[in-house]
Image 1 (tube, rainbow, N blue to C red):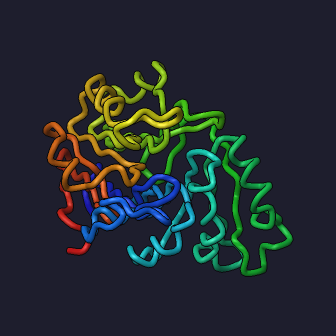
Image 2: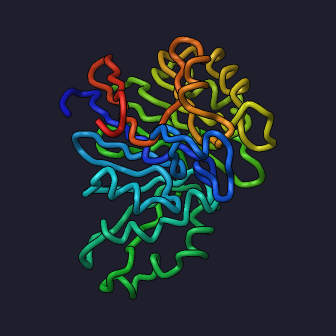
Length: 276
């Protein structure tokens, strides 16, 4: 990828915590043969000319890496310490081969505390020579850089755990805001992302939920921000892709596993199918 604002984002997974199809569910979506109704747990892979990174390592992380043939990860960003965003963390070990190969882990201090409790062996210096993941804690205290990309943490409300999303900015352009798990976007965060080109946000289902936005709430957020494109993620099996996509207003879409979004200058290219 070339160009100062070159960035590619791949949806590794777009499901809620139980995945789609859901275990022991016989609903129409869970029985669907449409590949876009097969959803792994929510995560994205971002690649630029200088480096690449993962946002969240859920229980499907290994499968997602194999599907997308991911060979390089320079950093990992974690939104919050729920299990559907953490439990694949140890599979990052394949990207820290060698004694000096550290994996920067960018997360809020409370989230790093949870990671350190669950995956304590990844942060022990005496394990650096072994085949373990060699994690390097990077507490988020403000904006930070990954190559030429400015990463802006986006505080959101999502239950009791401190939760953030991320906005990626290149060359002063607000390319994309990713908020996979949120119920409320506070006013200060709205101001941060105002003017963003593309919004990716939580849209769990149609009926209300105490810690996730539903479709109506996600559409209301889109109406406030007026991005050029909006993509819904963190979907549960109440939502059948083709049927619900057809009902959405122009510029609003339901993301699906394997979808790639690309920014080159001011253009956005949309992959038509992950199998193509």
